Structure formats: structure tokens, C-alpha cells
Image (cartoon, rainbow, N blue to C red; front, side, top):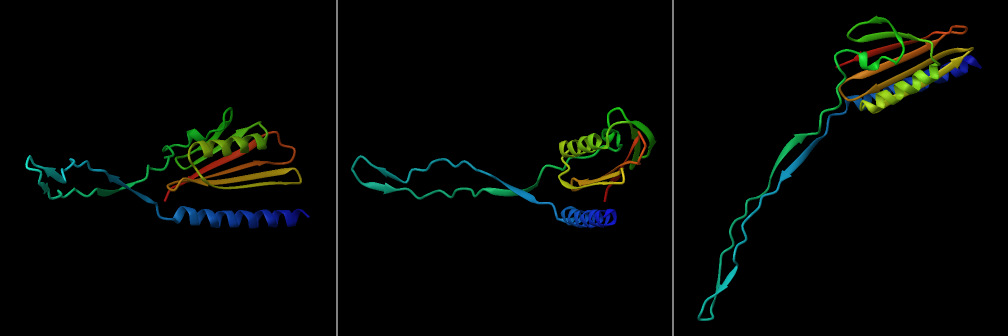
Length: 172
């Protein structure tokens, strides 16, 4: 039974990663903003004192110019991963692209904190896999903002009171 659950979790993770890759590789959309121009009102006809009507020729109005403007830039992850440090955790190892942490908190609480943190930072392409087998917990989160991919792995072994978290950042 545990093997079936593990295989199913790996399949779901693989499909999620494949879908996320497609989201990341899509070209960015460009929005066009047109600048309206104001034209002076023109008199189309005018009557004279003798009662005849003179027609005025219409003036050429300037056509609006459109300039492509890129959408607002995607949220940027800072050069360091300090913003992804779980509150109250201890840093075991740190580099510009990786952060290893330990905490005595429940893995589910840590997982929920990372889900909320990634969402609040604008990472919207998400894949979450939660696995618990024989009291071993492995939770994996993968999220991207178009420029950067953040991977979070949260593990706790049976009988341990420490939850280990690894955060990695991949930029194209």
C-alpha cells in the first residue's frame, strides 16, 4: 500500500513539474496602452448675416498613438533567501541559492507558512506534494514567478522532533 501511495505521489509531482515548466516557458504578455489625444472642436457650418450657410471643412484629427508597454515586472526574489527563512528556525547552511533550516515546529505548520509566503510574494505557478508514509513526512513545494523558481522540501523522520527544511532558488 505504501509503495502505491509513493508511486502515486511521484506521478503527481512529475505532472505538476511538467505543467509548471510549461507555465514558466510561456512568453510574457505585453499590454498596449493608447494615449488619447484631445482635438479642438471645429465648426462644421456657420450662418452669415445674409442667411447663407457656409460649410467649414473638417480639420484632420490626430490619431491616437499606441506604444507597447510591458506589464509590471514580476515580483523579484532578493539576492538572498533570508525572506524564505521560517520564523524561529535555525539556519544549518546558507548559500546564495540554497538555505537549510531546522525547526521543532510541526511539518504541516511549516508547509502552510511556505504556501502563504510564496503566494504573498507573487509566486503563482505552484505544485504542492504532501507525503506521509510510516510516520516519515516529506512535503515538497515548487513555485515560480516567471523569473525565479523556488523549491521547498520539508522532511521529518519517524521519532525525530526536528523538522528539516531546504529552500533552493533557480533563476534562468
